[in-house]
Length: 213
Image 1 (tube, helix red, strand yellow):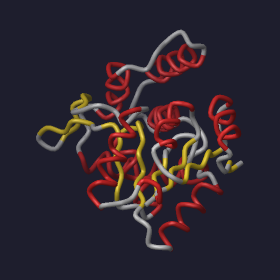
Image 2 (cartoon, helix red, strand yellow):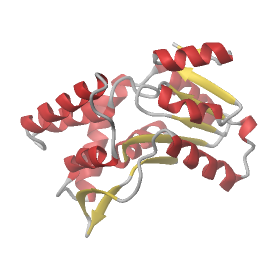
Image 3 (cartoon, rainbow, N blue to C red):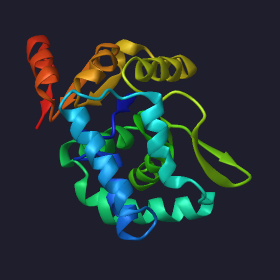
Image 4 (cartoon, one colour):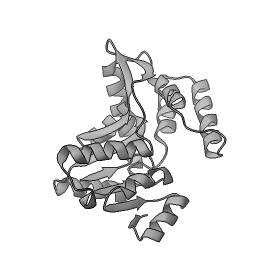
């Protein structure tokens, strides 16, 4: 069994920024929305703003008013045009190897669920979890229906998945790039750091974990 993070691991870059830019380019969201999103990420990168469920719900606003079929079509196009060229070669090769060996693979990401679903369809992954977006009467409301799979929540989802299939954590794998994924990596017997940020690189080097460039 193997768990994969999405942003920075399977895909090089920040999914939300890429998505907002794509939707602005095709006229789904305004330029002001793009600027606001960009400023938020600059503040977050500078340590001035923390990620909250409220901020993630604002991100879900990109789908407000769109039908399920419209979002599915947009996300298929987004994956083909934007995400696929950014697939991390080593991480996606590792994922393909796990699938070829008939390992159960799960993508666990705080990215919006429709984005995670589209990427997983492209990569041939059946099991995934993303930030859950609310749908009422066939249309997205711009709200969330539950917590984002982030940090400790990723561990909870992974543990539930291992328990469901009776997997031994010591025999499972996990791939991630960020320090917030440290708990997920520590929860399995075979952690792998993928192009890790400084904090995770230091932890991986100290622990002797494999590091994919």
